[in-house]
Image 1 (tube, rainbow, N blue to C red):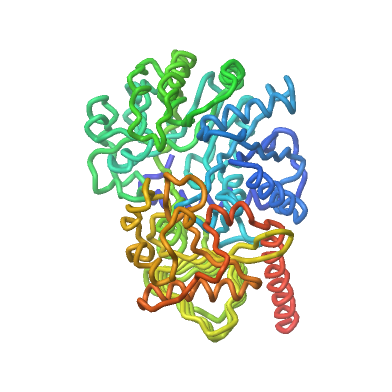
Image 2: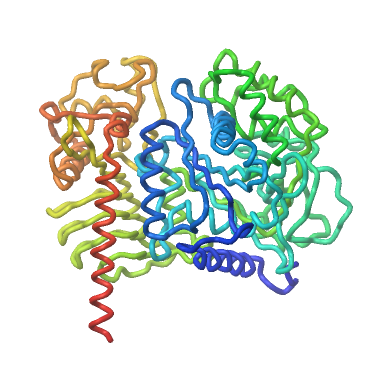
Length: 599
């Protein structure tokens, strides 16, 4: 338990650094039985994503960036209707059964959901959210390594079963040195973090059974009466989910990701990851086998956890307010899951000195990597991580963030911007709050503030091509309209999309959009030029942005144009990985030469 005169933030930082050191020791080495996960599985939405994930895992194992002697798998969702992360969980259980038969009933398994297309953070769309780079480590850590590091203590204190987590969040926690988080109870066990009521409206919230202990503890094992999924503040009060510190000093609580609990006399416990024992997993698998094909989106949190605990009721199954697409069979499927899991216990591991970070949007990504001093301190994030570039002065509050990139000494990157896996030449100027990914710019270029640019390699008719998606970092790629006459409500870089089409000399027809013609959005708008070289691709898309910004004509009518949706179909994963590897080798050689010169 934390000493009264010590800061929870210090304990959190020390605990996090200890886990990182322990994982670093295991990288590239065979692990002993029970020391690490038996299986690490990542979900993928389609076969293209599956291939991308398998290639990246193979590269990581080859370069000894992951512990060895572990089974790493990628499980792809079946073709057809979207099935959500709950459906992906059921599909993964079937894959485990096919691969291992009865053997998997003795395994500890980490299941990471990474099957989305990352429309709110498109630089993760091509290669996956779980392979998002972070600015620390050598080689650079990606979200996968960070997940494995933060969960390093779990497998040795876990009964056979499955830990379910998402690819775009980070859970940090501190507990007593002699304490461990145990996943050894029947049913489901979930981690819980103290959060403001506002944060609770966008998460799952636990209604805990009464607890007699008055002493503040970093780690508490509690029973959950019922689980609320993204409840209103009114509902939190109605179901007694709201806690008040009472005699517990509020300074004991670490600051939340978005709101400091020190300022709020009321708080709730919100969810992150959860564990299910093997018996519960087998029950879900038998159910999945019995239904045949799943045709609706199931939420592993909203639809599994809301069925648990003695206070669970069937009402939630008819609430579709948080559902992206309401299928006719969704309510029936939810009710069947409710009756299947009803009576199963939901155990809660309360982590009072913990933080939950979400890095799933451009705004969150920029904030946490450039401005958030807390996460920077806790993880040891760097402003310059494994890169070659001139010294960039640190500004008070926020700075730029450069990850595995090569920048000329005369290049400038403004505060609040992130550059990853890129080469920028001498006359390149990047404005503030930009995201630049996979780019190569050798000509004079000015990237406007708040620009998002991500370059992809494409394989089209057997030929290598390139295209660079370019937006404003605050553009809503998921926002859609049903008919062409309504596309004026879409905005590109803060400008009416219809005006942008005029500037680019593009006609408003159904052919302007790929895929579903009743779901028209920036995501499936065919506006991005296909080019023969990476540098041409970046400069051409940059001209698009400048034309919109300056309200000057730049015709795209003579280019082959793709939507982001189509780019992901044509993406050449091998070439993108090769480009990153070339940058890696050049930086490594540069560092060796520098070491020789200074020795």
